[in-house]
Length: 177
Image (cartoon, rainbow, N blue to C red; front, side):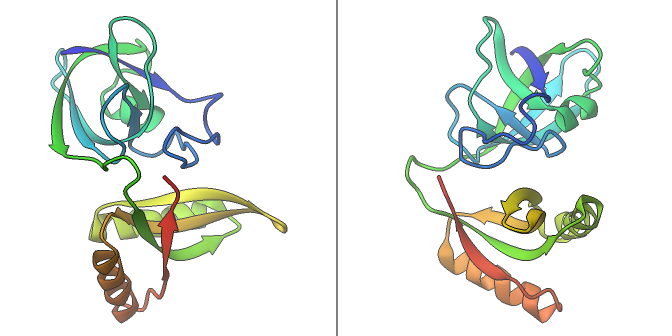
């Protein structure tokens, strides 16, 4: 047990410690030592609300705090106003070993974020993890929709075939660690 805090602006849109672009609207968190991709159930000890987050960043760096949640996760726990909450952490799945490869299936890239978020929500409800990643291209910002990450290339290739069979063609991408 310990205290959780949350972070949003000015970190939103910046690169997290795992290399992803931090999106305060995704269910992610920062932890000082847990491996990236670790899935953690966070339960508020006062209101008994809980949420599941994926570790993508490092922190918090304030004494007494054990996890820094994204704005979306903080909203799930109803802790945005107070800023901190006494929480219990439960590890649901282990993360990646340092240097391990990660893959995802990219199923779309859109110029409008709401369009990307709509597809991301549909995919998340059917496949578990799906996310939107901002990408600044030569023609402006695009919003990539990806399903994953996965650590097994064969698993992600199977996922790509499954998506294609459901008329959601995509391609496998290797994510930077």
